[in-house]
Length: 511
Image (tube, rainbow, N blue to C red; front, side, top):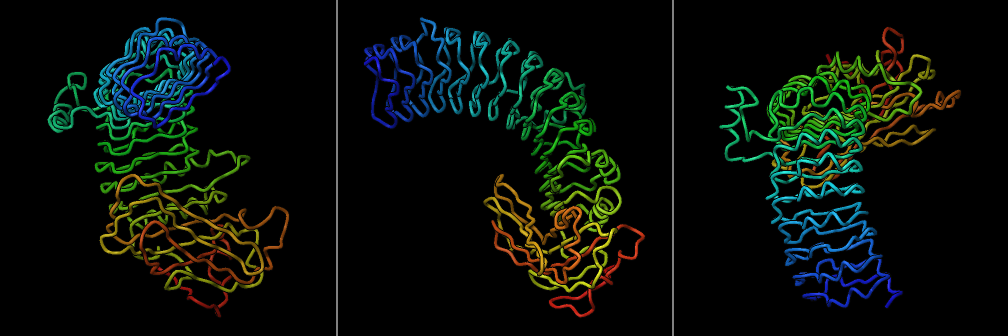
């Protein structure tokens, strides 16, 4: 059957393949996904010289693959995830063209042969969920084409020092590589009392990352990282965009994070000992510090000054601050910091922030009980000093509410005679989260969002309205408020631009 290109046997009850499969000389794809009774592959599978993709995912009784006696230079993808393979043959080196090797959740896999480092074309290596795998090959750095290394959920705590030579690596995950949890507290005490180099099994111990200059996504969450364990390890990752340090034990975030000029997403969820977030890099878009119950400070003067370094010529997306259950943060302190941000430092940037609280922050707001607020504007409210609109809402979730799925807080903002806008802050599901108290959502829409360049059509708006809703949890919007923001020390920086005759709300000064 020389012309057969693809053979799909997915989900069948096949126990073994006949050796005559080797006659399928033109076969490009062999899919045996979820053949749960498959126990063995014939050695003649090496005769499939044209094979590019071999899928054995979910073949839970497959314990080994045969020796690769001949070069299979065209095989690019080998998917062995979910099998019972205990080891790979050293002859895997004969897969000269292999680009993707997926060993996810091979729970019996204990080691990788060092010969795997001779796969010069390999770009993606996935060993996630291989819970018995406690080390990577010493010559890992020879994989010069490797772009993605996913080792989350393994028993690895000491990656090889040659990791630094993976100069083309874009994605690296050691999530959940935390060593022995039973000895963690003893080891952490040892870490405090002794030199770091004499303390083992305290969690992931990273080697130097100085050569990973193209790294974009780094996941070190749930690795039992303690204060100081990753200091000076991140400063060379100049192209890093996403950094996940969630569920660790640092007291403060490493200060050298401020040097990561391309960092857009910083995740520090459930870092129970985290007290302070230092100066943030200039292009940060999302800070997620949910459930950091010891957090006391965002170091606002430092990180806000760094935001001044943004290039005005670039398109600016809103900055989001997710602070669910950060009960140690003082609500008015955060609100004042953000007001400084949009009044004095960078009014062109929108933001969203979610923080524990049960009242509208201090300041001049037009507020209303319930989920919506509207107001009538005076003439000439839109002048050169107008910066944007601040929005705020107090949410109460049902007592004992557990957030079990992704969700979103959305604000619909519209001017009766003009455009319609939507501003939202979202979260992804990262385990059941019990929200312990009311929360305040604050948003800011800069002038540029609803005033077109070189146009004054917005000046005819007479009415604005905002309404809030939350998906992903049962809730009640207790109250909400809206506020026009003007440049400081100008006549517009007061509530005179709202008419005294308004509906669905009242204007008040909250000191």
